[in-house]
Picture (cartoon, rainbow, N blue to C red):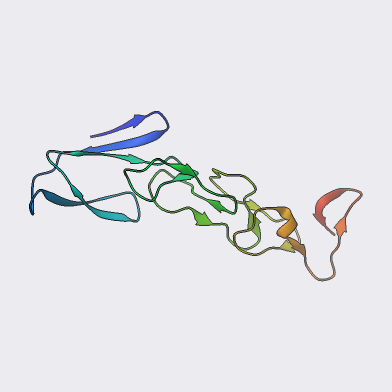
Amino acid sequence: ERYAQGSVAVLRCKLNANEAGKQQFFVGYNKNTWYEVASGISVLACKPGWTSPSYTEKCKPCPRGTYKPTFGNYDCIPCPASSFSDSIGTVRCKDCPTFSIGPQNSTSTVNCSCYVGFLVNPVVNEDMCL
């Protein structure tokens, strides 16, 4: 059974006993865990921009420098090189300004540096390399 509960998706499974009341099941992208169950278990999948170390713990926003684009209980993804995430709970990273590059997991445009031979134009736009 699947339904929305507030800002999270809920998957409720009624499971048959397998090995001493345990049943293996997979939900989301990278969580594969054994749970003790009597007749079923409720699982909360975190909304985009939020994550949890397990299906039973409260969802928390992804930290700066990371993002998570979809529902699920997978880990937040580091922003790729030449992008950044300057707030928590981000669903996508922002690109570094044109003609600049930055390291993976960046949290601000401050981490983006102009290519060799390009300079920041302070008159027109401080986030623009010319």
